[in-house]
Amino acid sequence: MTGDQKSSPTAGSAETSKPWTGRFTAPTDAFVEAFTASIDFDKRLYAQDIRGSMAHARMLGQVGVLSPQEAEQITVGLAQVQAEIEAGQMRFQMSLEDIHMHVETRLTELIGDVGKKLHTGRSRNDQVATDVRLYTRESIDAILAGIVRLEQALLGLAEREADTILPGFTHLQVAQPVTFGHHLLAYFEMLHRDAQRLVDTRRRVNVLPLGAAALAGTTFPIDREFVARELGFEAVAENSLDAVSDRDFAIETVFALSLLMVHLSRFAEELILWSSPQFGFIELSDSFCTGSSIMPQKKNPDVPELVRGKSARVIGALQTLLVLMKGQPLAYNKDNQEDKEPLFDALDTARGSLKVFAEMLPEMTVRRENMRAAALKGFATATDLADYLVRKGLPFRAAHEVVGKAVRHAIEAGCNLEDLPLETLRGFSPLIEADVQDVLTLEGSVNARNHIGGTAPAQVRAAIDRARQRLAGLEA
Ligand code: ARG
Image (tube, rainbow, N blue to C red; front, top):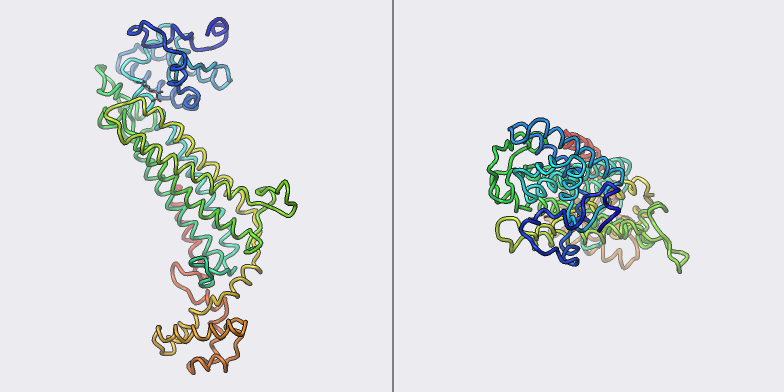
């Protein structure tokens, strides 16, 4: 750590740059330095760190702790540090531990001793909590945009497939016919709850820790409301000990992302099943699949498989954060440095998964004839026949028994219920008349479920209209 550092825009040398040299006589062990450093992963906080520092400096200028000229020099210098980082000119180094020290050290190199005044009335403890909250807030906004995009893709597809019929399953056994549009709208509901959860979580993320300093607050006459306004925080953290040590906001965010990923994983699982030749309900576009290096016939649904797999990372991140916090005494502990990698990974993974899903869905081919054939196969309209008999006066349990017998007969005859001659059906119950054919068809079955939340195509279209309004409400 010598020589060339001085010629390139860098943040200081190892021995002179540690902010705690006053108390220490021996330098940090080289391995410990690398072990404790967070710069490899917290450098992505540079913009938030600089924004937070600018707000802090302006506030110090406002309250008279810094002169207006000093505050100005610092903010101009910080803008230059940011430009250097964005131009790829900052040489990141372990000896400077984290992004906060890189920025401050480079600032001081650029503007001289005034730079050393920036850290007045704050600590890296409230600084890092502020940076991570700003970063999380921005990421939540990007993820919300990703959810909305995927919701829109779902609505487009649901509209196109409002009349398409496929078997609905329970226990992965054919249960009753449903429309594909209705099936897709189930995922809209899940995603919409995910979006609402993130909107709600964002309110608790968007609280300003700065001013808590190391843990107890500061002796300087700070104006926290000013800083909150500058940085777009909705509130100022009420308690300094909590402000520096709390990571609920990260846990909550990653919980919301875990559930989002669980939803995407379930959807992925269906896409994987549906694209198998055994189902043959859909075909994913080639650009979202890969082949096999050995089996020429294969087209593998890699993208949904990876999303299903990546849900494990996000759920793992939630576990990591919960366990990270459970034994920590107040207030800040270095353990908290471990919050970043799981949080960032969860944010990145959710963002990427949403993007790939939103791009994949409109590209997939729906094999309507295969869906229909599958719905015709499993006696999917048996419940409709039972309901028909109930309407003719038979108690439901008795109707269930009658239809069960008819199904057994059809299985033995190797045909569907609607293929049985009317006379055969009447053998099971004289209440059955010619109009039975209407309830045995797939269309008759789905059209009959004509109420809010039902699978009838008319209901699907109405649900899509309401969904569009709900989306507009979310975005407002
Ligand atoms: N890199 C540290 C973190 O991520 C910054 C705060 C360090 N504070 C301290 N007292 N060592 O948590």
